[in-house]
Length: 529
Ligand code: FAD
Ligand code: SIN
Image 1 (tube, rainbow, N blue to C red):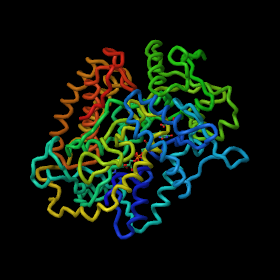
Image 2 (image 1 turned 120 degrees about the vertical axis):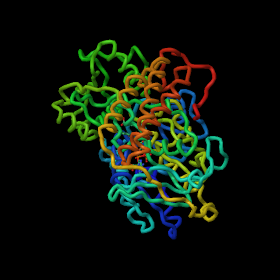
Image 3 (image 1 turned 180 degrees about the vertical axis):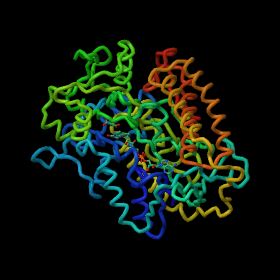
């Protein structure tokens, strides 16, 4: 079994598969080190109905549907909400620590935007780090899991590589594994597998400002699209309202968790005046799309670079116990959150769309599954509810593992797959062509397909992307493969998918807001490409 990615989705699946199939090898490829992933940076926590006296699944379902603005698949929402607590219990059994209330055995449940109850389990403001640590330690116990670090998956192998014509409507496309670049020796390996699970995470790096680490380049979605698999809802890129504004620029942008607002912090302008009442009754804890748009609007109206988060009235000991990393980071920039307001600005944070999968993580390509941020299960619809993604990744990793029961035997290795053909390529002469291409791409997306969109901006983006696409494909045909070149190619595909879906959606819904169609359409459609 081949797993691409070593974040929460990839490792959860690998652990379950290794336990169930001790005689099978589970190969996990990861493009840098095992611990580097979006998962590792998750701060706020994992949402799950945990306190039956105050909370219940219906409330979590209702909050998720409300945030998703009419595009969630309700049956998927129910699956994730109902099965989520069991998956959380499982990772606790594997050793994950979540904070408890002082002097009590009860978990300290936090609250974030769009949640009607306190239901976020967390480990200080380092929840993702703790989950990633737990998963890596658990995975290391299984001799049949092999994690190959610095292995960059380039393309999925399908019938196309056997010389057959494969187009988007070809029935029964099959995945036989992938080609992967061993970054340590520069060789490209053909990796065959009975089944391939894509867990390659998000694509925040398509924008100039993002909370996502540099690995988040949408590789899995781009590979699937190139293999003629179905992708959906790519216009719904979520901007987190509160990344830390750093005038010196920082990639990734540091996140100031929504849990800080759940703890009582309030959004204000530079003069300390609140503004969220003009946008939503839930004020600073309105769903993310609303808060991010409000901040964007206020910044543009005032011509300022940031807005502010006021924590000065909060309990210092409580704040430092829950948010030690945020506190330290602010101090390192000369901001004492107990004395100064924290400057914040929206940053791209999460890809709500992705590889179209069903309730068991099956993609439109046979023998290819997807879980975690690279997939589109129907849970998030037009806007993800905070802290639902770690939950979704665990639930779907589990459901994929369930779906494999009885199937592996019927899938053989496709020994006819040819090796990668690098004929006619030479070492890159000018890396600047790639680095400059990436800068241009991020500019295009940030200026034309960001938080606020319009027909004209989408058209500009698509026109410019086409040029960049042509230039980059030329480089790809003639240059030896490098991770930088592949990431640029993948990000251009992601940018195209976002821009095209945005141009098609003639309404404003959830995270997609366009000045040409500010209202909702009466009928609701996913954008499947
Ligand atoms: P990732 O954890 O991103 O893992 C992707 C893996 O794929 C990595 O190992 C990467 O190296 C590998 N990979 C990618 N491309 C290739 C390739 N071509 N070849 C080989 N390997 C490849 N969600 C919550 O629910 N709660 C939170 O509190 C929360 N906070 C967040 C805070 C931050 C700053 C960020 C960035 C995200 C946050 N999220 C949160 C979102 C959540 O962390 C992610 O959606 C989730 O962790 C994604 O998990 P994943 O397993 O799908 O992908
Ligand atoms: C945060 O801590 O604000 C991020 C939570 C999330 O993205 O779900």
